[in-house]
Amino acid sequence: MSLRYPFEALHLYTAPLSGCSARIRIASHLKSIPLTYHNVDFSKSEQTSSSYLSVNPNGSVPSLVVHTSSSGNFTITQSPAVLDFLESHFPAPPLLPVGKEKWKERARVIELVSLVACDIQPPQNSRIRKKLEEEFGGDGIKWARYVYERGFSVYEESLERGRKLDGEDGGRGRYSVGSEVSLADVFLVPAVQGALRVGVETERWPLLKGVVDECWKLEAFRKGGLGGHGRLVP
Ligand SMILES: N[C@@H](CCC(=O)N[C@@H](CS)C(=O)NCC(=O)O)C(=O)O
Image (cartoon, rainbow, N blue to C red; front, side, top):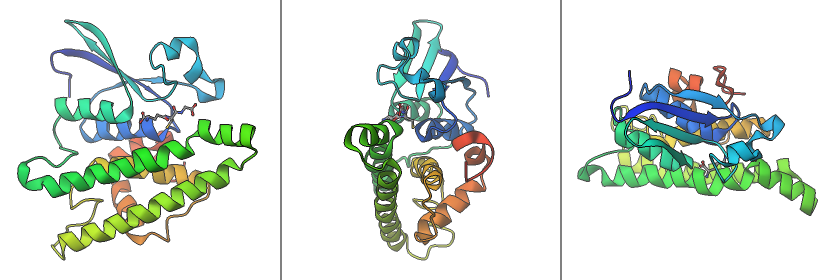
């Protein structure tokens, strides 16, 4: 797929093991959007270099730089804002349920996205863990496990509630919300990959594990996920 006016090119600042960047990579593969990748090397602290801070003052990935022919470059930081941009301009396939009659499904997707984006990912982020260890003498890995385990238990409960709402309707319930891939799955899979890296196994959340296994059958998740090497365990 080539880009349509008014975008000339889309440049993604990303890091291979960044779950927040993986959200964008997976969504762009699902939607067949061509992105030019720029790797930000965390091992060299490039995310806090002055050149990268001029792109993203939060010192985090992802950042999407949109090159336009009419008004120069426009930078979007924060993965939900980037995903909203992609959803608006590349609506197929939709990753957010559309239409008034789908209001419950849409609310469920945004609820699950928020659970990962607000209640799971930020508290276990590497810079928080580092601070916890260096300034408060805490155990960053143990903390990350706690955050993931608590969050995934809530996710599992939400899936259970959703399945009850959907009833025994044929193939429904394969993914986080219904039978279509949504942003909820795009946020969940990289979070599960991050959790595996700190030793959290997903067997104890059977619905969540089922969703992740189903997503992993899709190339977009294998290509865009953490590491991008086609493995669930990075
Ligand atoms: N709310 C931001 C979070 C971005 C974020 O925290 N990204 C992580 C990687 S997943 C990062 O760049 N961390 C930098 C660091 O820990 O120094 C978003 O959704 O884009």
